[in-house]
Image (tube, rainbow, N blue to C red):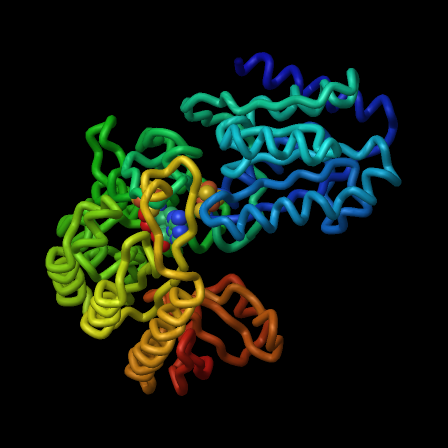
Length: 457
Ligand code: SAH
Ligand code: SF4
Ligand code: F3S
């Protein structure tokens, strides 16, 4: 397999060299950090084939969309964006359009895309990066567009990566998900859980730190179940990585409450480099709905875990995900979510209205509550959470954060921005040479989503 991957990369390179023009690719990734990390590999492969990159679709010889399927609006966006490429394709018949990732991994979506959008040349799934050079080379030389969804579950360690950021590096530690939460499409499109070898992760992280990366974000759909096949827990992996010397921080996404152990919380509390932040999606505050979601924990066990974590890590920032309007959820269930929010007092909650995903168990359940009503519940939740977030952040005023400065604020470039060790967005004024460094900031003000302060020289 490796031979064929390498040989198609080489053939494409020679093809472009003999044509005497460097081809240009536009790559856009939708969805979660895991997908961004996949996108960095897709770009790594394209670069090895000879592509340069452009941020303008009009300049591109290849347009590649790396898609997400987690909610319906994510998919609608992609269909809209693909449709909008029609004009470009009419002007440039040799333009190659490729669509891959979680959305196209679903056979019914791949079929729909083929049928409705003949302008799409290549359709590929989530573990198909190794096939991309072949699919593109065949399109270039034989004009045969292909569909490839059968990527298997093998982990490839030799795929080149073109990192999007110079400060923060994504490191996937595992792929797939075995949890089958009844609303969720991810286990179907990302297949079964599999972990990279601890040594592979360790070597990569060590090299990234030596290369000057300041934040290493470990990725998995459920990092807490890392390493089962290798007999190394996520906490043990974190300890190994935390022992590497250097000035950097370790962050991770995402933790599932059912597998979040005291060992993990203790490891964070006692570490030198691990962020004091846990993103622990609770989804709902009603035991009845949690059961229907197949989440495998209760409000009581979740609360006990959150309390243990807050006691062990006094400056812990706890954030969460909430789904509003799961099929069969009543206002009474929803009001228990409000109660839980008030009890746990999350710093931040990412809230989503339930979206029906074809092929999941919840898609078969009756869903009588209207979208309008769910929207009203959502607004109530956002109001409660906004107030709690603001009050939480106000408690930091007067204190000092160590902030990894990531750059200028996109909307207000007079400010620098970054994340604190608690992963709280912190903005402040200062010179550009703070960018990419850990700096100390005295906190002077709070907003519901961030704090602001003054640089301590
Ligand atoms: N693996 C991660 C989350 C992946 S999806 C975890 O388990 O935490 C990110 C978030 O999207 C989920 O936490 C959930 O809140 C939301 N989500 C997933 N499927 C959804 C659906 N069908 N409708 C609405 N929100 C959904
Ligand atoms: Fe989806 Fe649940 Fe897996 Fe997260 S843990 S990816 S919500 S099935
Ligand atoms: Fe979306 Fe796939 Fe991530 S469905 S959220 S891109 S794993």
